[in-house]
Image (tube, rainbow, N blue to C red; front, top):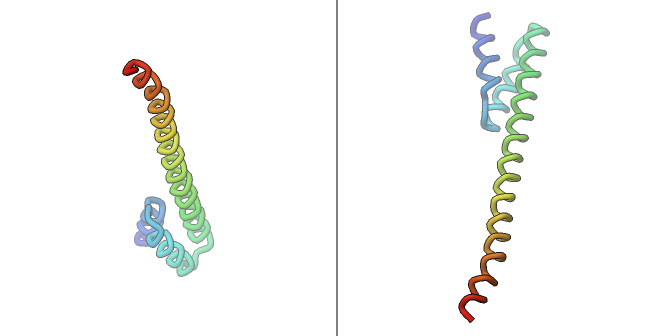
Length: 84
C-alpha cells in the first residue's frame, strides 16, 4: 500500500515523457479503482502542465526574438542617418 502511494507521488512529479508513459503503465497495474483514478488524474495533470509550460516558454522566447528584431530595425536607420 505504501509503495503504491509513493508511485502516485512519483507520477505527479514525472517531468519527462518516458516517465509519464511508465507511470501510465503502472497505473493500469493497480487494482484499487480509487487509486487508479487518482493516478490517472495525476498523470493527466502533469502532462497538461508540461505541455503548457513548454508552450509558454516557446511563446516568450518568440516574443523576445521579435522585440530584438524590432529594436534592431529601429536602431539601424538612426545609425545610418547619423553616419551620412
